[in-house]
Length: 83
Image (tube, helix red, strand yellow):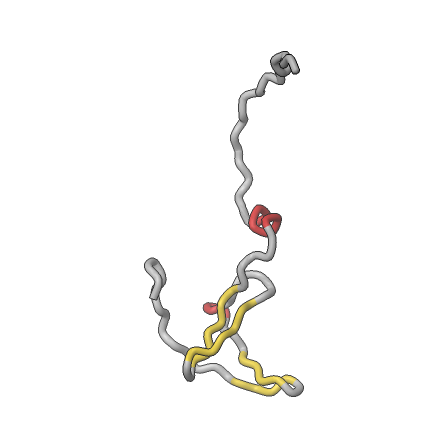
């Protein structure tokens, strides 16, 4: 198991049919962020993980706003270059 992650106790859940697919209700304490997930099979286990953000904009949207005033940067003209 990766460092910093702890296993939580298992919980019995209901498995049901949704059309031709099998589905499971995810209890609130196991709720995943976002609207997408990745599912994979490892032997007899199914592993469901939150899908990673799809774009840089999605990652940036998750960051907290900075409450800092930054100093003005002078916009000096470039140095003259002889070609």
